Length: 379
View 1 (tube, helix red, strand yellow):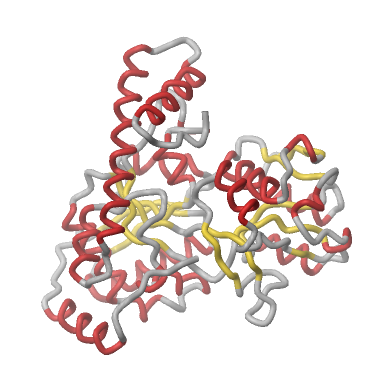
View 2: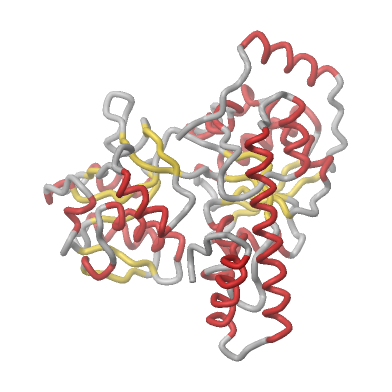
């Protein structure tokens, strides 16, 4: 992962003193976010930031746990929360694909406030008793497919693609959920599974007789990364130093994406977003130890050229501290243009209201994006 270049420490200290001296945000007394389930790193990071908001500004942060992508984005869509500490389903929601392709969803005008880029990776963990060293070695092996979990399945597909494989090259085994999938690896029902390298179930495999190994996505393997990008566009190159069987002395060369990603709808009040981004930046030292992943909120870890645009309020703050570049601005505008194309296509889709709604939407979506010069990714 390539993090942004930031000013020298002396310049940062001077900037921080200047922006902090006159900061008196008008936050609501109670702020609501959706987040991952209780006890997850995403939930813990939200709570850590919430404590800093309470200690400094008297804000009561209500964190609403959601067990899946829909239950985290639905409260945001319905206006029950102002923000969501979400994952890569942020991109699926923006695109109106998978579970967001139905009539009640469609593409959402989502915007990033800031995001956490920690020291872990996303990967397929394999049972270490099989001698698997590369993703290509998974040919003919048993790989799980989680019903109703496209975020898990499409990323699994991407790592198979790194090894030049598809679902046709492995034995697909269906599971009802994430934990069941990982229990299946421990129990010998399958040979690999997708996870963040710090996910709790991966520790169970590490401690089991099978052990765990994470095949690399070599950063110099152009073919691997081109094939992954054809399946998912949101992976970034990254060396992980945290995870099951991973450390600073035994890093993992692979891929990741930001998690959690603090998002809002485009029409969220720009001043509140500006002030929230500023507060998260100013009080980093107060919450950075709340969870091992909380270090990912540091300003020098932000990626301003990812696949979802930043909110106008955040952009204004990032410009004020000198970390928003012309390249980031051009990239952001292009992403907003993509969202506008998707929104127009969705209006046409709703007006037409075809019987085969989802299939027709995916076709209309792809045609609109291609006509505007964008890659549809999923057709």
